[in-house]
Length: 323
Image (cartoon, rainbow, N blue to C red; front, side):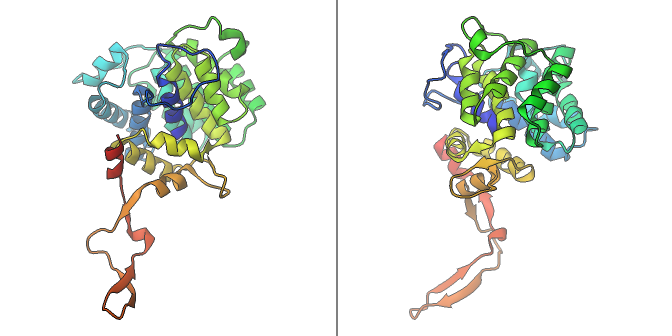
């Protein structure tokens, strides 16, 4: 799901100041994680907390979205959803906004089948965006992620989208000159999916998505979530993106990618996962009471020892120092 965060951050500085070209610096000091990243992480944590149990996933999603939404209250939420975050008894409000689809990527990565992707998507979406178009937009992204990560070709994915969700009778080049800000699912999800389908690799997908204009961070998040499933995410982009995250965000991402690993692109090794790269970027500490294995003593009495790697636990505190 790091692809959604990567796309969100790349598009964040262009949301209200569109840049209609693929030629831009991908990550900049003005970039930041927005509500797309925060709510994606909330959905991921809900799936982890309830172990994909669709009977209770909606309750866990409400809990985590409200908790993280209140912590990251300046992330850029829509007005009605912001009220939902702070409501004592939040209810769905018949929304077809693209907030339904921007946060849904964890469902596509956690799903063990196409039907489970749809069920997880429905459970996460209906708590707020219960309009048929909101439900459809979220389901479209979740199912395309599942198809992309399980070996479907772009031609097969395009056919599935057009048979079940949206007509994709345009290209990004055709719409770029006149495409405007549109926060509806029906006005932005097709653009995000088309950007992926036209792309050459992960970075190109993000550049295409952002260059379309409109709600650039959300389109970037949706495109990035699918592009990750199809291509994998380059190691340098992963390392750059996590530099924008704080300890709480990094911890959720770390454990979700550990449980549901996705593909990374590394120049050094094959078959790398996003988790492998995250794990190398996180400091480790030795818990109190852990057995230390002595493997040598110097003449001056200094003792050398080590701890089995599995005994060490992640320490995310350095990410707060970077934030």
